[in-house]
Image (cartoon, rainbow, N blue to C red; front, side, top):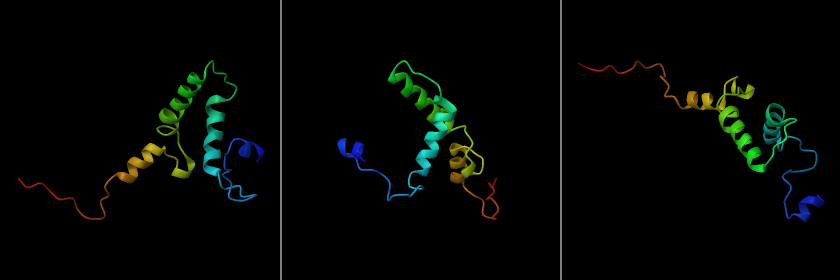
Length: 96
């Protein structure tokens, strides 16, 4: 709390002991640490930023399977959810 006060930050927890407040962010950062940056030392901040960006944009969002999305990547999940659905109706046929 002193760190937040010293840097004029508001803590994000809604109340003491609420462990679900940042669960999504904590899960994502945990995956990033385990799968990409554990025991890695970057020579510069720019190299670290580029590597982390590549992990998130090229792997985590496009390729990595997520259990809460039914075992598909976020990109595949979005494609499937944006696809027009045939709701039991036959498709219109082109007339010749």
